[in-house]
Image 1 (tube, rainbow, N blue to C red):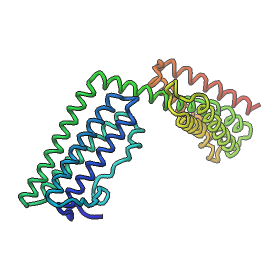
Image 2 (image 1 turned 30 degrees about the horizontal axis):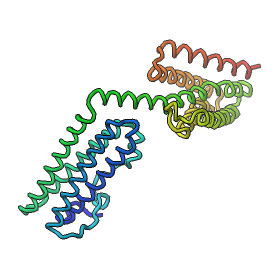
Image 3 (image 1 turned 120 degrees about the horizontal axis):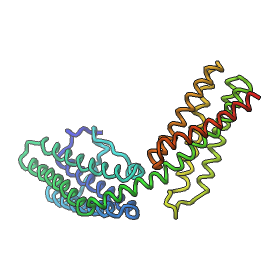
Image 4 (image 1 turned 90 degrees about the vertical axis):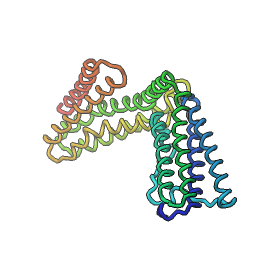
Length: 318
């Protein structure tokens, strides 16, 4: 890996060409992946990809004029200190706002690169060349802003953001909430029944782990098989199933882990505190994302949890 200061003018131009090509392909990938769900943003990224391609052609013309037709391969990952970026697919999975922030960061990184390259040399011709590239990138950033205003006016951006939130609720929040409710509530009875029947923390822990893992596997498969997501817009069955299954396991394990404490009374008191936190979290999620009244959500969740908990304690104490 080379230091930035070790790059020659030829290397800097080659790096600029490969960087412009990579950025253009990233924008094109975003445009392709988002065209169905976010057509306004997709068209914006397609226009930006075209701008990057135009810059790449200009850079190639300058390189060929000064250094010949062969362009050496110099990539960002070969230069020490270059900011490492997340893969495009990973950014895309984080939502439309994450994509927009990523694109903005890409533009800022490119601008810093050209400015730093321009400031490195005292040669008049090379300095002018790199300064022109810095100005071109700055103009590109302004062009990107103009493209966004054209392709993504205020109303379109609000609509896309609303659609993104709706997909997040349908694909992540809803299956996760179902799993958390099932794991937190349905496992209360077997865990506390085992605890009060045996007064042995380890036995309660084993029952809780079995109930949590079993419920997680069952709920994960049930969610994945219930809906293919094509008509409902609820996303891929695999994603929903994984989210639901993991949240079910988390909900059950939360009040199971305290029974790793050998003292039965201490473990049970701590498990009870965890149960209250779990139920409060469920109520908060319902209020935050499902438009439920906070008092109504809390009352329903707490009542249901209390009934299940009481059932487990009564059966275990019989």
